[in-house]
Length: 525
Image (cartoon, rainbow, N blue to C red; front, side, top):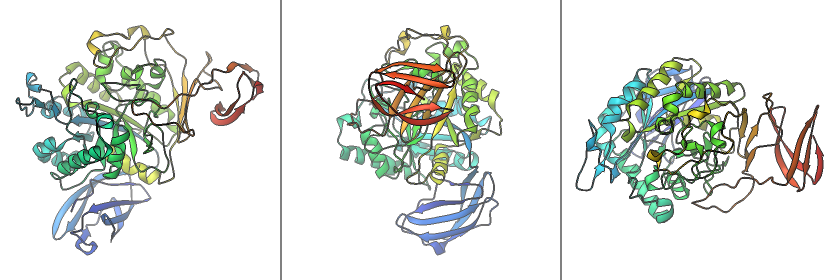
């Protein structure tokens, strides 16, 4: 039997969860009275035992249950209908070809084949910063970490609400092995299934969360299918606007926040899918989209402190993360959720300046009743309740330029050559705000004029309604509107002059997406 990792719900609504396994019956389960969930039911299903209950109020707590005369304590988290989530993620899998012994407090290292991991370093240097504000952490781990650290992770699960997810044992910079391109789908299925079963073996509860790092291929065609087959509901590791990075991460075209991934082409949303794609880390949309090409500005303007450190943002823009969070939070009046995800690899927690930056940021924004700390497991279960099969969320974001001084940014830093160089745009400087929108049909960016008013015609569009052949080392194609000759605003009307006919173009009219056909010649709106 495997317990549910959490009981997660929405106040005033019915929630659901599972115990997996055939060695238990509904009659052997007895939940103690709880202030969080009432009217609990249990029935046998294909997975094991399916349970439901009515959520009473928002908050965190423990629900106790007796199973075959043994008492278990299950963490629960009850949220509201709208949430601005703060999600802290630490990846801590072992790497072949990585030797952390040079760092103080390095974890288990086998010098024979240089297998390394930095769990203890992360637990010492970064975790106390998160605990200072009682933040639950998502730990992405492999079977080795699960075996050696199961006691700590299980204790933190109950005490702080931490969750674990599966991150396969991988390689490192110079010995990558991309399962999306160098292995078959069957081989990837077997590899991931083995990683999941071996990791879960160490814990009394299962996980529906996984992460794929760049050294085994990142989130890609094979891994998305393998994870879905293995029962994964939330998959971490997408790089918004990444053409490529660290030998993989061919993710350009995907949305900037959580979405249901199409199993046949993971870069686009699919309302019928059962697996949510999570970003590697939250990005500054505005400055990212103004740095196209290659790995793009997404590898600079992110909540990975190493990214901004290597490009002089951390050293010069002391409130960059605070401004980013506040900018996204201002948009909650028009959205049902936002996931502000911050990730760090354990092997990068020896960067003390980055750790201090995280601490200064968290101290500056917490506590805040409008910010809801949550793990990936909790967010995934909340999203499943909010958006069932056939439903997909939408987001509309107004993003300002949050850099104090664009000249602070260093674009070509030799120390960052692991990812390649990010070239400074010809028009680099302070940009006007943008409006950004995505749903299951499109992703579109609209630039504002000098008065702050958004343009009606998109700056760029990814049209998910179209069908394109999937290329593993490719991207979702951007729409080509080069036939548009002129867009003119005249009093209360807009004139679009085009040399080409375009059907169902997403125009932004009164802060709403309106699909319009544009004919050759003059078009008035």
